[in-house]
Length: 268
Image 1 (cartoon, one colour):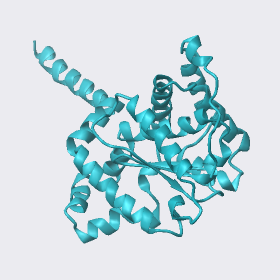
Image 2 (cartoon, helix red, strand yellow; image 1 turned 180 degrees about the vertical axis):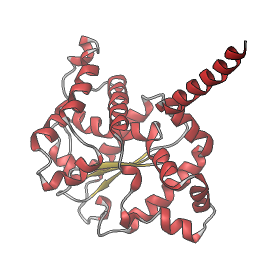
Image 3 (tube, helix red, strand yellow; image 1 turned 135 degrees about the horizontal axis):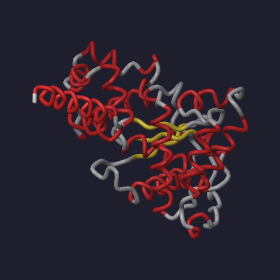
């Protein structure tokens, strides 16, 4: 009886520790500490910082000859994917183009803000590839990867201090010149985002193989490409990642895998 009394609490403790290590549980705990409203507010503050930095993040819509067709096109793709995911339906998403043809990249800010570089749009060869990249960024937000990273890096107290306007906390957390900490995703985060992106693509009517073909392009270019430096540092495109994505896609029905790739309608 005494042994049983000892074993039960130890077993419960081990189970609880295991649960805390699970991605879904971790996401739930993050949601408990950072509400949707708080995450969106943090995202808005990052968005303001980024879009004020015109040297490093020149907005495509600030060009005198920008194409409204392209802006609307990227937004339509993004909103179509958002409407076809059920992981997180309580926040709005926006999609913004950064005018830099030399950077092949895209990134997501906590709270529903997705940014895509013109360099990435130029590198894609189909709408399905563009949708694959955007779906991946949406998945980082739906799974709260960025919010969790901020929580782990700075702690809940400092994030709440940012929200109430504490100047020291604002300088520390919102200092984009030191790098956006939430962009440094783990390998597990990348795999989870890929897996969810494939589901979003499939449900939205795209061929998820478009995501695989773009990953192939990145792998073939290799880390030696200066244009890929930013993308590969935040979204490592390894052969293992491609293999895992292909494994998920292969389990899809033939009608999904045989969908024709949609031609890209607009370029920057």
